[in-house]
Length: 392
Image 1 (cartoon, rainbow, N blue to C red):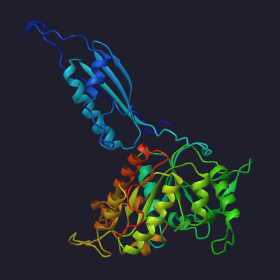
Image 2 (image 1 turned 60 degrees about the vertical axis):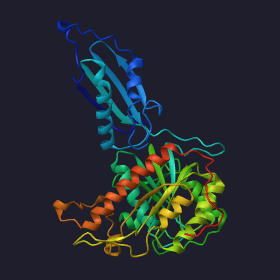
Image 3 (image 1 turned 90 degrees about the horizontal axis):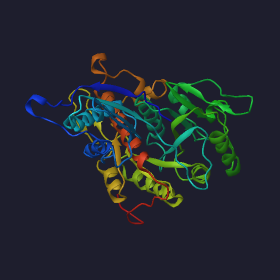
Image 4 (image 1 turned 90 degrees about the vertical axis):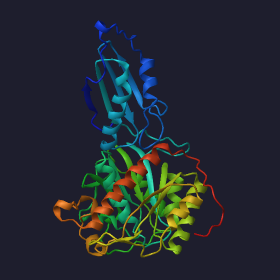
C-alpha cells in the first residue's frame, strides 16, 4: 500500500567529463549506484537504505541515473532530506542527470495464529496502567499526527464501558451497518473512527462480562468496513482486564505504546501492562510520558510539576525507547470537550498560538515519527529486558 505521492525530481548535478582535458569516466553500473547509496543512512532507522531494502529500482543510462526509494516510515520532511542525500552520494559518478523518486509503503504484518484485519497493515495498541494519565488524548493526537505525516490512519475506541473518543473528536453521530451487516466507521479530520459511543446512548451504562466484551471487540475489528489503512490505533481502557486480554488473544497486534505520567504510581502500574504485552509476545514500541512538564507561556521556563525522569528510567530499565514527552497544559480541561483536538488547531506563532500548545504539537509530531520508526522494525515474539520487579 503506497500512500505517499511519489516525489520526482531530476537534477543535472553529476559532473560530465571534459574530453578536451583527456577526462574519460568508465560506464556507471547498477552496482556502482547501489554501492554509492550504501553511504546514505535513513534518518529515522539509522541504517543505510540499501541494507534496509528501501532501494526498489535502479536504472542507469549514459545520460541519467533513476532511483526509486520506498521507505516504511511516513515523513515528507525526511523524504526531502533523503532525496538530497541520495543526490549528493550519486553526484560523483559523473552522470549528467539524477532522478530520485521517494515514497513510502507500510507493509502488512502477518502474525501466526492471528487473523489479519482486512485492509489494515499494522495494529498499534495504546495502553496505560492506570486511568487519568491522558491516554485517550494521546491516542487521538497521535492518530492525527500520523495522518498529517501522510499515513492512512484509523482509531478504534476499545474502552467499551467508558468510551471517550467521540467526545474528544466532537462526534455526535451514530454508526450504521452496511448491507453485509458490517459497521461503517465515522470519519473525522481524515481519521476513521469507531467507538461503542457511536452505538449506544451517551449516558447509558454497559453491564457486560468477558464473553460479550470479547464478541464486541471481534465485531469492531473484523466486522467493521475499514478502508485501506496503514495504522489502526486501538485506544485501550486502563489496566490489564478483560478487554486487554481479549485483544492480545484475537488482535494481530504489531506493537503497543505505553502512556504514563512522571508520577511513581503511574510508572509502577504501567509496568503491569508492559509485562502483559511481553507475555503475549506483543512488541512494546516504547513509552510516552504525558504531562511531562509545564512550559511557562510567557518565558518558556520548564517546571516538572509531577516529578521528572521517571519514564526515561523505565525506558532504560526495559531497554525500550522513550518515544516522547508531552508538556502539561492548563487549558486541557476546557479543550477536551470542544471536539477540536490539539493537532487540528492552528497553534502557530503567527496565529498567536500558545507556547505550550506549540510545544505539545511539536512533541506529538516527534512521537508519531518515533512510533512509526519503531513499528517498522517491530517483530512478534518480543521479550523485554530488565528485572522482574523494579523501582522507578
